[in-house]
Length: 361
Image 1 (spheres, rainbow, N blue to C red):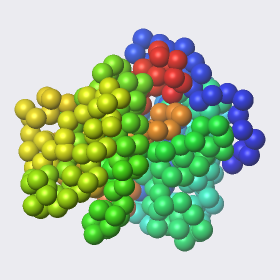
Image 2 (cartoon, rainbow, N blue to C red):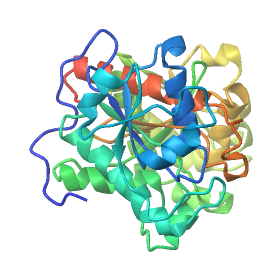
Image 3 (tube, rainbow, N blue to C red):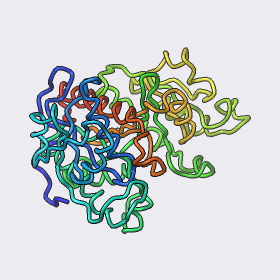
């Protein structure tokens, strides 16, 4: 990892016609998972889906081997700078070579390769900050494998925040996870914690900051000038006026009142069981839910194979397919690239939107 902060802000480039002129940096993810094959398959579909140019930071030999399962998708062009991807993308998948330490077997993750997984992420972030890539689309990692090698971050997102602050120390990051598809954008205020811990974790400061970051991201990255946010309650029926819990009265409602006073269009707290049907979704641009499943069940019901994980609150655009490494099907040629393709398309749109507004990526 480069220890000297870059003199560039992330993504200083001019916007193109709905597409950033720089390629999207794609991280390798765990090479034993489905990341390599969905990346290859997406490149194979590049013309049919009108995909933005992307460059993958991964082991070129591993990709050649994995690509043999796809018709024509094993054409690899090793490049030293992701900008070179623009010239070769039509004929070969551009790859910045990040060597693995051990031969990769699909479906069999090896902690020996953890350093390459992390190096891929670090090099992608560096490329974005140095203006050689427009955004990052990350392939899934296996945190349990990384933990065995001393990885100290709770997850991928926290690691990206730390890398961001390394490159741009003046930008203090507060990452927020948004799950998005055509039908719904939803943000969980709390994420990977036990349900029993949610009420204590749901502080006014956390909720207020999450909603404000969501509002600003909708403006900067999605060109929604006056975003409308629907906020769920924590309890059934949004607490039923305190009969089923007082978090709505004591925590959520006061926060929403403060945000409304600042001019944000906020509705809620709303009963979570009635805010995700089609008619209700027409009334807002994004929803903020109180905990993981409250947010992820509706979006995975609506778009199980098409959902995108977009990280808000970073000084650059990062998207990811909304699924994991899927070791059980890796190497079998049956993994769908649809979520990865949607992540690429969203990254391109977000980066171009931010560039038009002078916000970087």
